[in-house]
Amino acid sequence: MTTEPTRVLFVCLGNICRSPTVEQVFRDQAEKAGWAAQFVADSAGTGGFHAGEPPDRRAIRHARERGYDISGLRARQVGPADFERFDLILAMDALVLEGLQRIQKFSRGNRAELTLFLDFLPERKGQDVPDPYQGGPEGFEHVLDLAEQGSTALLRELLKRKGMFGCGC
Ligand code: 4NP
Image (cartoon, rainbow, N blue to C red):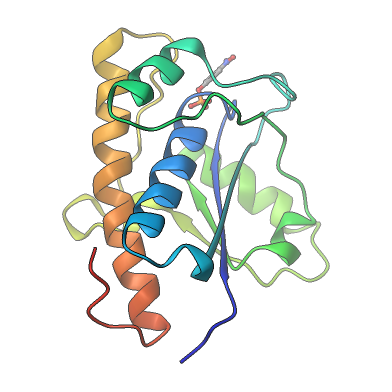
């Protein structure tokens, strides 16, 4: 059984809507299941235009309504060094995945497994978490639905890989 924490980085475009939401949902699910010490979760954006900012206030509000506090998170831009620091780098959509593949080429260590976040959810394999930034409230609710479903599937898979079955999630 591995006890070293698995390091997971969630990445979207701005790091103010989707990836901070998924980061916190995943962290809270791991904690509720009693596996907090097994994981390190973080998030970043392929774009740096919101670096240093808190999440979008709509994302904060919708997350809070479901019991997740993302207000303390701050946006940052992903870089080549992240491919050395993280075990998994999970993209929110295909465009972000393409951007990450380009950045990955500049990484020296490059040990991270890079894929789409929803690839861990069999019924949504290959699908995007749609960008809610320009749309209405339903987009933020959809992000939360996908964050919850995808995080449960990811947690199960990672615990399985660590040999921790009966994960309680
Ligand atoms: P995110 O959403 O990638 O889920 O954080 C976006 C946030 C900001 C912008 C685009 C998407 N923007 O163009 O400023």
